[in-house]
Image (tube, rainbow, N blue to C red; front, side):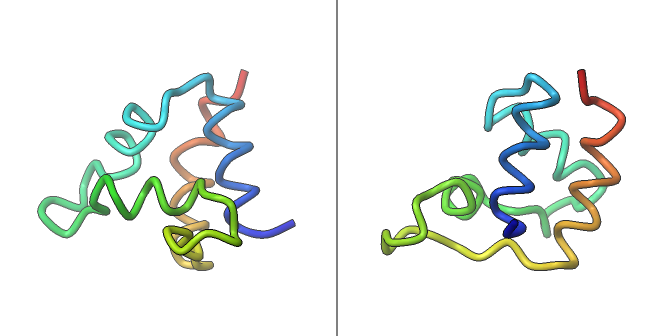
Length: 71
């Protein structure tokens, strides 16, 4: 399973919209947080030009943030 799929499952499992998930994900990053357009790219179909790969470092942070929110 790719990091992008894992991210999608974590966000869905937490019952969050993408904007809410991004807000929670970016806490503590300040101005270095992920931009909305980049975040949306993580959820796109890999065959599109908008798709962005969600790297391992970001996945570690996503698991730390979203796993406690799983329903």
